[in-house]
Picture: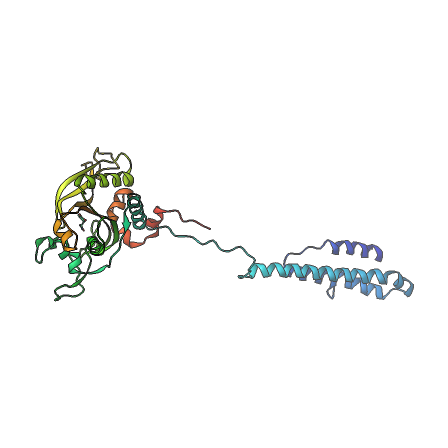
Amino acid sequence: MSSMKEQIESLLSEVSALKASTEKEVEEARVKYLGKKGEITKLFEEFRTYPSELKKEFGQRLNSLKKEAMSKIEELRESASALTATQQSKDDVSMPGDPLPLGSRHPVSIARQQIINIFRKFGYDVAEGPEVEDDYHVFEALNFPPNHPARDMQDTFFVSVGHPNPLLLRTHTSSVQVRTMEKMQPPIRVICPGRVFRNEAISARAHCIFHQVEGLYIDENVSFADLKQAILLFAREMFGPDTQIRMRPSYFPFTEPSAEVDVSCNICHGKGCNICKGTGWLEILGCGMVDPNVLEASGIDSKKYSGFAFGMGIERIAMLKWQVNDLRHYFENDVRFLREFGTCVEV
Ligand code: DAH
C-alpha cells in the first residue's frame, strides 16, 4: 500500500483535474472524495490512528487536500448550476431575439400600386370616394336614366330602398369621376383606385367584391387619339415594351364613343394559347370619350372641354400579369398563394 504522502499527492492531482458538467456528476464527485466513505474521509480515519509525530507531518497536507477538494467541488457546482439555469430559462434577456417572419404584399395591392405608379408618371393624381354611394353618383350622373336597360349591366347591392336616391354599394369606381368633376374644374387628370361590389355568384371568373381603377382626363381639345396613346403607354409599362393594343367598339352610358381594349397576349405573344383562348388577345379595360351629358351634369362646360375615361379591374390585370387562373384565390388568404408574390423575409 502506498504511503500517506503518495496518497495525498495523487488525490490532490485527481481533485484538481476533476470535471463535471451536470449537478448530478458534481454530487457523485463529492461523495467519491468527501462523502462518509469517501477517499479523503478514509485518509482522515487512517490519520487518526497515527502517532503524534506523524500527525504533525501529515495534518497540514491532509487539511489542504480537503480544502482543495471542497473548493473544487463548489466551483464545479456553480458552473453546472449556471449551465442548467441557461438551459431552462425562457427569458434570458441577453439571448438574441426570435426572428419574425414578415408577410408579403397581396397581389392586388402590388398590381394597384404598379398601376398608380405608371399613371403618376403621366401626371395623374389619385382620387378616392366612398364605397357606400348613392344612386346619383353611381348611375344617374353617369347618364344611366331611371329604368335604362344599361342598369342591368351591374347587379347592385342596395343599402336603402324606396328612396328616390337610394344608398348602395358602388358597382364601379366611375362614381369617383363624378365626385372629382363636382369638386374641380379642368384640367383634371385623376386615377381612382377602389373596392367595388356586385351581386354576383362567386366563381373562378366572378366575385361579389373586387377592385377597379378608374381614370379620367379632361381638358381643352382632348381627343380619342390621346386616349389611345395613354392606354398604349400604360399597357407597355404594365405588360412589357412589345405589347400591342387593339380597340373594339363597345357601349357604356357615360362615354361616347366607347371601346374595349385588348392587349396582345404576353404568354404566347399573339400566337394563341390557352390563356388567351387561342385569340392572341386579352381584354383589359373599358374606355371612351366622356359623354357631354356627364360633363354637364357635374358642372363642366362640354363646349369648352372634352375628356376621356377608362376603367379596369385590378384582379383581372393581376391575373393576366401573373397567370392566376381563379379569382377566388385573391380572397382566400391561403399563404401558399400569397407567398408566390414576395419572399417571406426573416429579420
Ligand atoms: N365602369 C365600367 C365598369 O365597371 C368600366 C368603365 C368603362 C369605366 C368605360 C370607364 C369607361 O370610365 O370609360 O365596367
